[in-house]
Length: 611
Image (cartoon, rainbow, N blue to C red; front, top):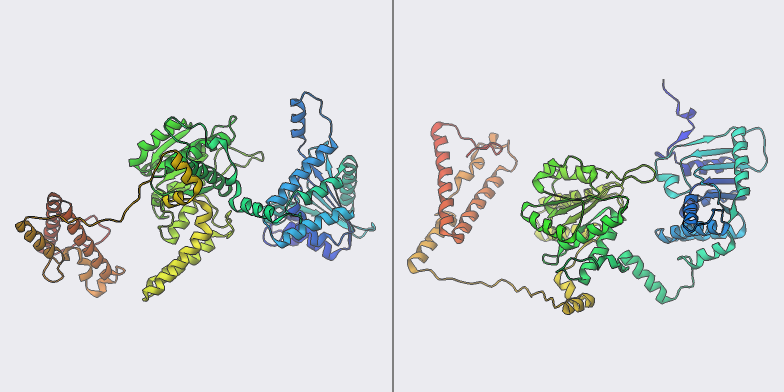
């Protein structure tokens, strides 16, 4: 049976059918005089979203439930009997609203909405009360005309949406609109009863909202400067003693490493993951381990024990095992890149650390798919509402930008939602698609100067909008010019040596060897008198109608021949023994080709393992 959309009173914030649009429609088509809202949580950012619509109402009442459980727990810890504390109820409400204002992304619209809310409270048009006796989680919105009549004088909306911006538009919610007079009357009577039991938000708290948030217009230039530093650097400016203490014997408390721990941990909490990209030799393994240990103790400890998965190249596994052991990091499993398919229960991990992360950049590789499954599978730990926590991901790589745009995107997608990221650009998929397409078009651009400039522009956008907000990176030059880092390194008697440019060192051969060497190089490299490497150009000699089966057959043949030529030249400079071995394999491959000609059938298919 097909249900007509016109008979459905439920709505879920999908498409245009949002709670905000419902509120707009009710005020547009009815002469609403009273608007009452009973909500579990109140956010100032949610109020200013609905303010343009509900300002048409003459009286607005908002009743907010608070978390009584915390108040009961606090009283029991102090050995007193819990009683509803009106002042404490207001204080708790004030702290929530204050934090909401402070954490809101600033814009003129946001500021005007916040000031409008305070103006409405002072004028008495908006009344806010908090209920200190019941842990109210109900969400009810009541719309009434000034005079009751029998022809539909209002509406009631109830469901799961709080008076918050996500609840109004973005979250998937389940709400229903009721228009029967009996429903409106019941909701209004229940609201009035709870309203009488509640306590009003006093003018003292309203005044404090202006003086203790950015809504205060009395800041000095110096205070504005400090605010700028706090906003720009975030929590990384806070000193965290846990980053300095508890170092194993033999490890120095370096300031630049402590800053990296704080900065990396904060980025990981905000964005779900980050790139740890200090240059070689600055201790990325130590920094990553310290972040993991900090996460271990802050992720629900002692009631919950976090587990960490570390993915490493085989050659680095022993180093990681030693570092983890020295720092006493518990709950750690270390696997090599090629063993990801053996991870059977990815949900048991809360943190994933990937060393040499730039090796996981192709979404067509099996290892990348295994890693993506591990990173995207939610952890077992659950929130109060029953949902599971997303994993935290740390990508350790000294070269986060040394890849194609799609490669960078694949790494970022390991911890970011491609369509709803925590970055300012929001839709990462759309952002990267534009740059990937622009990068691919440059392959057909003949002017190399144009190519260089456009490539620079593409990577500049990626660097500024994606890499920088997600990356902790310092070079040795940074440590020298940052006076705190420099002074600390001097005090610790640590000196990074200057790296000079490579110097050419010539070595002399005996005359007969020098002649033989020059003759050999000529045979390997001369375009007409040397080796042709035709054994590796076979695909380029196909007849035209067969060559069409392979894209860019001539270019592939040429490039493969160049690779073999370069390899032989490098081998002769490596050692005569290595060169002889390579020449032997070269001869064997050529003999195999000759035999195939003698047999009348030549195998050249790139996807066949033919020797």
